Length: 95
Ligand code: SF4
Ligand code: SF4
Image (cartoon, rainbow, N blue to C red; front, top):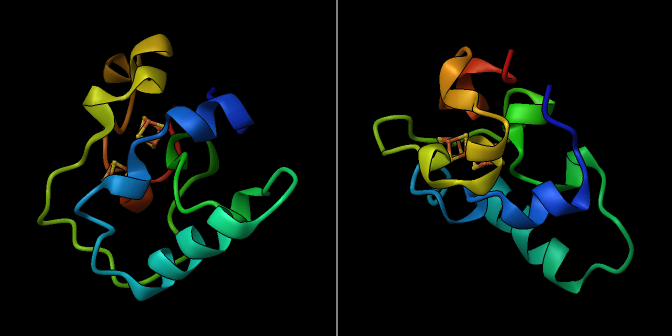
């Protein structure tokens, strides 16, 4: 099980992932995070879906390539050995 914590939020590659690039909701959350102080909650972060499950934003494009296999969180937790292995934003959290 991947933990939702600030270290993992900072390592997560979802914010730059092309699957999310066209989602206005995701971009709004990213903009809010830039100006935010304190620790954001899971609902504020459009990422770390391996820990928190499916994206709550709409407008994601799963025909683009998931970035998870390049992510240090993915490597540390050996997520390639589990399910779903990638596309956590669409498939739900790592298990
Ligand atoms: S889980 Fe994968 S496909 Fe979804 S936003 Fe993150 S890197 Fe992109
Ligand atoms: S494995 Fe994917 S969803 Fe999990 S932190 Fe890395 S980029 Fe984000």
